[in-house]
Image (cartoon, rainbow, N blue to C red; front, top):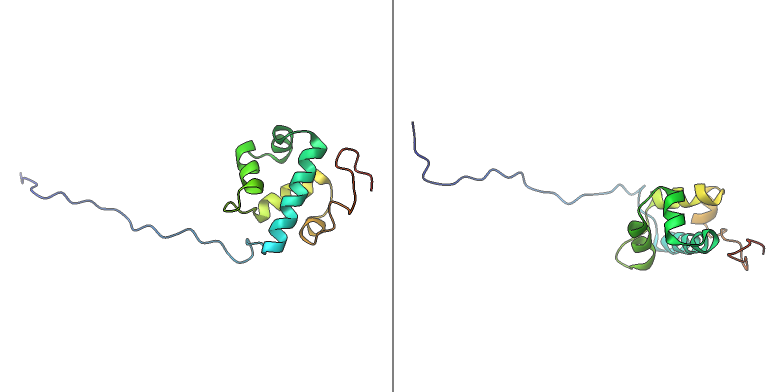
Length: 108
């Protein structure tokens, strides 16, 4: 039986998680997603109600909208479009919410 005199640690080198270019949104699209999510939050009444409707945690949703370092993702845009009942392209191209729409009743 041998005696170990030196500690050997086997750790796999970590690589930063990379996302494909298809998953990334442009800064303009990120801002449009933030506007749409804020509109939906006012429409549904609270972060909790919106998070439940979108199937995400409240903290994740609020951080993606409020914090500049946490960017909205394409998945968040898809969930917002599903809740709003519009195609995701309307959110990404800035057609949702309609200009001058009331966040409480939705009328323009």
